[in-house]
Amino acid sequence: MNPEARSVFRLHHTDGDLALKLDLDGAETQRPRQEFETLTRLIPVFTETVARIVEPIWYDPETIGLLTRFVSGPTALRAVTDDPSAENLALLGTNGAQFLNTLHAADLVEEIGYWPEWVLKRLTSLASKTGQRMPQIGTQACNQLIERFRQISHAQRGAACLKTLAHGDFHGGNLIIGEAPTGLDMTEMRYKLGLYDAVDYLTSLEILRPDAKTELTDLGLHPALDQAFVETYSHDLPREVLRCAMLGKWLILTFKITKARHAASSFQRAKLKRLLDRIAHMT
Image 1 (cartoon, rainbow, N blue to C red):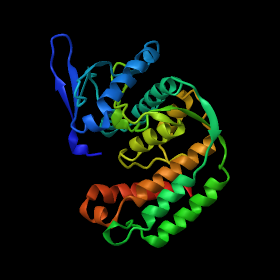
Image 2: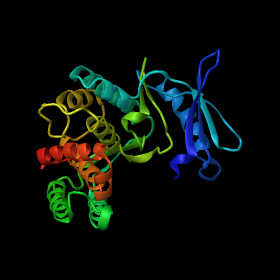
Image 3: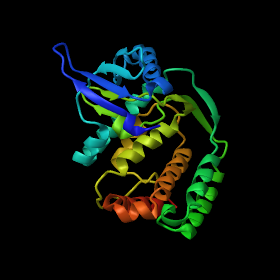
């Protein structure tokens, strides 16, 4: 996927503003058509709930454009950056869970086992990079953390979890906080463990939260964000499995900060410190 091939424009209209998403790779990927069909199918599911998805209007026959209603309001990522107070974190936790409550019940739900082997493979692959592409924390530290994750995750192997219709890319930039929490960018939707939508959302908000002397929960989160999300999310979400999946995500994000990225970006250097704080707290 070429990220430069995709762009979004706001179109002003007397009957209400519209959002035009252009995908220059759309003729090949069929992404605009597929997203239009997904949104059209899900609109009735969200009609009677507190959460929403963007309303599809049109996709062009060349399949490089998708038109939807424009939804005003900041994304959850912008909201947590602008206001990291406990009160706002609780609101964002509630809003994210409200959206996932509806999405994860939109189709058949199946109970399957939790198998963390893919995380170990991903971590091992990232740890094997060399030169400027190797993780900033070094090979020895990577190997120690991989072994620690292996020990922690072993007890959760096969634990019962729910396979649902999942967003697939549910970071805080894909949720608008407006009159109703509204989901965006449904291009990666597929059936998988719903807990990974929760993990993606929670980590994306927590990692942008400005540093403060706040005791973290066992998920590596601010207590207000953790409590509001967990209390609002209505599907079965075993705490120990969620904790294991959160740790796996924190580790992957840590291993992705290479020596090159660390040297080039003050943001990446600050991010690494936050990640290591959370990992140390959880391991």
